[in-house]
Image (cartoon, rainbow, N blue to C red; front, side, top):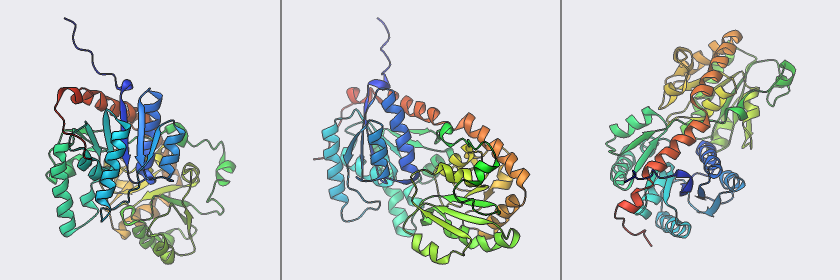
Length: 388
């Protein structure tokens, strides 16, 4: 008798449940969807309507269902969970892939193991809160693991954080990836780079790309900025993105800081940078530093989950700082701004590192392997019905 044929992931139908619809998580999902559609999967995305993610995955050929869900749990949670359950019943996927805490909450409450379920935290929810709320979030993650056939972490550090919180699960660690061709610096000469956005003066440019929120730590960068200017008076800082802390950050910023608001394409801003900084308070593995390194730019990042794994070997002493430490951040930024040859060398090394280890095609192939592994579970295991 011939051996049973291994399931083919290209014949699968997958539903991605996603909240939020913008930022790094949205870019990760859009890249996955592009890869999966091209591989022949039937792909459905349930996400908030009118978002960059909804537009991007529709353009890639995925079916897009409007899931009106906010970022935080609250009084609408039951309605949001029931709404997602209805969308899953309509789409009839073979597998559900839930991204970030809110979608992970609603999808696992709706499914309770009725379909193979992949959960990708993109940074653990209990790291974003404190006290009783954090304890409740950890308790939920431990309980919800029984309804999760696979938890996909974007770094070994993120997996360890989950294990230390008591989450017992079947794990896969799949690093984030970027489209290296999209972010490669195509500027042929210095004049072309000078014409990039943000390069209107002679001083070095520091760029921070990320949602303007507590997680990304732009307030730490602004607190460090006067000490950076004391070392490099001509330096300028560009904060790319928007978010709930935008008004407060703008009020605290000196004239040498520019806010771009939300942008459709971050690649030109990386190319405009001499140095890219992301002083996050927590992450799984941040996407922006990978994009910056794909653009050939050196980075300074805070030592949170995924940071050490994303940096090239030997870059840690120059490029890694404690989270929430403006003094250490100012020292690291000032040191690199004052040494252009070192920046260029680090940028070349960073580009080669991302090219060899963090190409988005590797990420897509690894996720497809997870799907292939789980594809047979629906037919071989008893499942409970999806919640009404």
